[in-house]
Amino acid sequence: MTQLYCNADLNYVRGMEAAAVSVDIIDGRASPPGGRWQTHGFELMRHASALRDFDDEARVADVHYAEISDLAQRLTGCDHALVSGHIARNPEQAAVHADLGPIQFVHSDFAPSYGQRIRDFYAEGGEQAEAGLQATGISARDVADARRMLILQFWRNVGPAHMDLPIAFCDVTSTEAGDILPIPVQDYAGGGFDFEALAIRAPAEAGSHRWYTYPDMQHDEVVAFRTYDTALMERNEPYWTPHSAFADPSVAAGSPARRSIELRATCIWH
Image 1 (cartoon, one colour):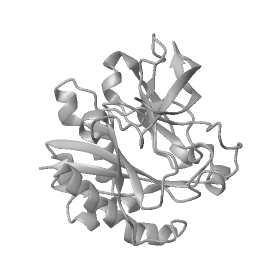
Image 2 (image 1 turned 30 degrees about the vertical axis):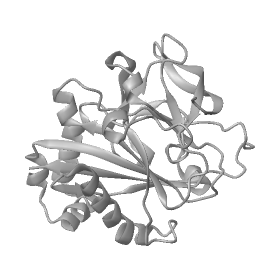
Image 3 (image 1 turned 60 degrees about the horizontal axis):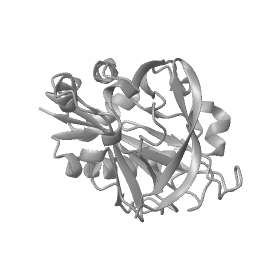
Image 4 (image 1 turned 120 degrees about the vertical axis):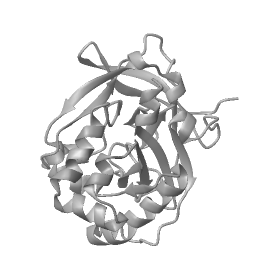
């Protein structure tokens, strides 16, 4: 029997307007989705880091990027996995820019156009791009010529186990192509990066999208989730993974506030 974690409102789009939809969110520990990230879009896994202070930006780059690159390469079998940045979501970062707070909007991070955007990112040769290329020993031309590109993201709780605004993931097998809507994102978090993301349309039938969360995530756990894959696009199969922060009814708003970190691996095959 499926074990629910809670019922919560998630913010979809209906037409071009925001629409709050009440959904049941399944306890993914007690009732796993039945597949792994390759089939269902996301997966909880153990992954201990040598890093202890995730607020130390320099140490995150020096230590954790390589850990996530290695993990992504093992999970996908890719030739190279580039990690060129991260996002810390906590009250301090949210005060700097609203984009760095928990995103309470049902979305998947990238539309089909993202492949060209990431090729441009490495070709333009900024500091982050150059660091990512040097760490993997490849060139911008290797990225441009990749026969396949897959984006695998990693979400880790680095604060209290029972937090406000945790994250929920939608089983991609319960979605379809008509559910996604490309939307422009301009100057993300004030960093000058423009791209297209995917908003998710409100389902015609309540409950048709299956939502999961993993209660009380520990620091040695991550959720891996796929947000882009050219191989799936070529086969007209879902490459997206809808996700959203949600207000946990068992936690008073902001007490304790969520502290999490997200890293993205650009996996390429020659």
